[in-house]
Length: 298
Image (cartoon, rainbow, N blue to C red; front, side, top):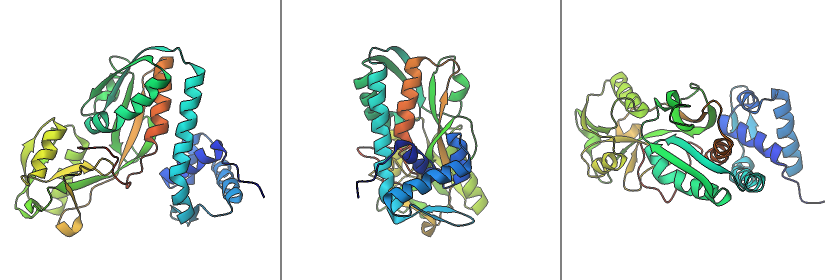
């Protein structure tokens, strides 16, 4: 018996179901019917000779085999997209204006942009980092692409992956036991700031803003020194902080979604960068090991 063929179309369906934990939502994302996606997953499972999902009436979860395949599937799809891009328009030129969160701009995007530049050395990327809440409104004016955070199930744009905010503090510090709880957060407009304050209010936990800054590094440094508790992304969790959980007396936080927004009339260079980012950023599950090498998050 020959080696099973990992058809990219089947892998795309597999990754979509794995990310969304739903055949219905995956079908919507892929612009297919639910039965078509189910058939693709069944064909992939038959080729591999193993079940990739555990299905019930209320949820879809990856099997151990599915967990093992997921990272390989993401890498295969990302490499395929990069190879096709390098062959289709090697002489493409232009400037693409990209908006993204601070931690992604400093920790995640540089490596992805380096890979893109190897395929399109004449395309320039002008990247703006900061709070992304208002960036989609600027598409077409002074931004071409925006990678933004949204509440789960809300927001326009292309779904990339989930992001789980986490409470964090300095190692060996006990500031999370203080009353009121000192917080180091971004200014108004930050989704995680809004969620942190709301969760504490709903839990009846008193708090105070000990430090507010647009600087991601400054917020993380304050928390690392034990002066306050902050909220960071699970996927870019700072190495100098420690994760806090309900056992530490802090309420749970909602799940966010990372979404890619495109401007109307996007250039060919912008469209190719969007495809490149979607293929790569769609490989970041919300509960994954923090991306390395990395530093801060927000």
